[in-house]
Length: 461
Image 1 (cartoon, one colour):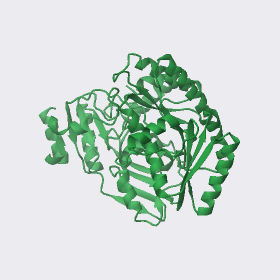
Image 2 (cartoon, rainbow, N blue to C red):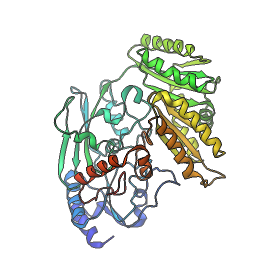
Image 3 (cartoon, rainbow, N blue to C red):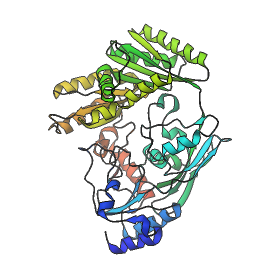
């Protein structure tokens, strides 16, 4: 990196917060994208660690002067290569924007620096009287600003939705350097175009998020986990809308195939408690009273029995619930070492059994397996494309294309949670028309006329 550029950045942030030594920037070059998918990082970069929005504004204005790419980086927990630099540029680490967390109990909101981690937020909320934030993407090292930028999801989407549903305000440094506040402590705001939610899921391409305002909720005191087993994927899938149509909205409804979840349990040295059937529904409930919890559990079992459930287990103790959730959360860890890609496709929930059937047919075509689990309550299926003899198979790109095309038959999406980034970008024409993609490029140009902010992610100008 040019010495003059490094010197200018040091004037803005201070000598201690600009790092150009290659031996010290390795941890800033990659995220959690799978080994065979992640692009090779460009090492001709400098890492800067600004303390606030004003320093970020100065950095961005300078980057526009010299037409130098800027890559905003949160906790590095993403899975789509969005923060991996593929050209010389400035990596903007948000780690120092992590001090301020203000809980506004009267408005049921929290205002926090974007570099605050989910773990920090949850620790702060433990001090309050029963407030909580419902989104958990599976890694508490994720930073709040990054969760907004990626529109993070998780198992609780059935009841609480995804990150987009809880973002009420943002402080943002625009790609041209202006600092703006979008939204606020408002439940309703219907003025003009919704620039606030354009930032949600924009993956650091439209602005740099420096503060977040998030909606909080009253915590329910009683939780329970129910495992219901079936001999048929169709029966399991048909049970889900029947539960929701009954007026019961669980916190989570997870679809787990027995062979997959048992492998995840073995990986952790635990035992999956449900033994019958080939597929389980894992249903998590949260209720205000113990009576409501048991009543709804019984109602779900009665519904499931109408769809030929072969067994049901209620985990009542906190330890049993924790073990079940840990096993389910460990599926990715258990399989990704032997996989090329952990996909996160979305289809309409009622289409899940048909899509899974298609996965079986595709797997047979390539003489492989495609293990899958999913958030069936919202139609989000995670399936793994496995290695062949420990290596990337020659047919990898072909099978991935077949899987995406299968999802498109049902009106699906190529990514439900992980985002587009650099690894899913080439598949966008499967889901969007050329005109739709051109409109997205137009939005990018309007925000970022010089194309300096996280170039190569989502769309190319």
